[in-house]
Image 1 (cartoon, rainbow, N blue to C red):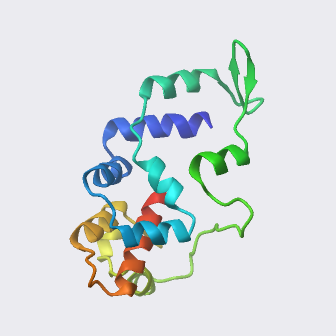
Image 2 (image 1 turned 90 degrees about the horizontal axis):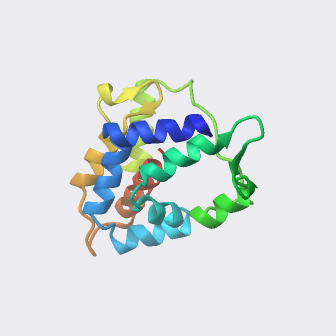
Length: 170
């Protein structure tokens, strides 16, 4: 947890892609159909939380109070820990469904490009792929060029929502 918080603080201060996506969210409201899809797939709570400004002083204070030996925060009034139920309440994520995890090492770059084209609506350039990992800035660049209107095909809206969900996952 301490490592996660320190990484979050560093990335926020260095203006890395995670913050760029946060900036994108602050500057562009997601179209209602995309928000509805995020709600259907259980990511609307994460989207809503992604629009919050970070309090670096609070994060610093929490890092100082975190004890990795007990996996809890030590305060003057006692210990506190974060549970899976807390995550569910804060982020609005379902915790009783199938686990999504893993790394796909079997796909070639061409297969990854085809996969991206099928599921998120664009085929990234070779430089945007490192193995099966896709650079965040390539996704941000793609969604910033797509304009969702009432006439936009449903498949394009779904692909856009998938790209946003992928960014929300980091």
